[in-house]
Length: 100
Image (cartoon, rainbow, N blue to C red):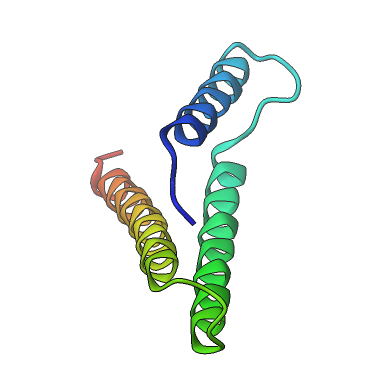
């Protein structure tokens, strides 16, 4: 499963629209928790796709290039989720260090 630029741009635009509507106080806005949950869900789906591709190659029904692409996509999504988590933890720790 390849990550094409069109789907990335579409996802970015959807996130930007959701964030701007939430910032403007419009109903139906997505909060940060939902964005993180969706990112984790998508990372899990990517891992499942990579696993299915691996099984298909083992059965002789798919190409190894598809497996490598799916694994790279899953790894990229997981690294993104981990980076966001690390930034959230860092921000929380910084808030805790603020004097009252």
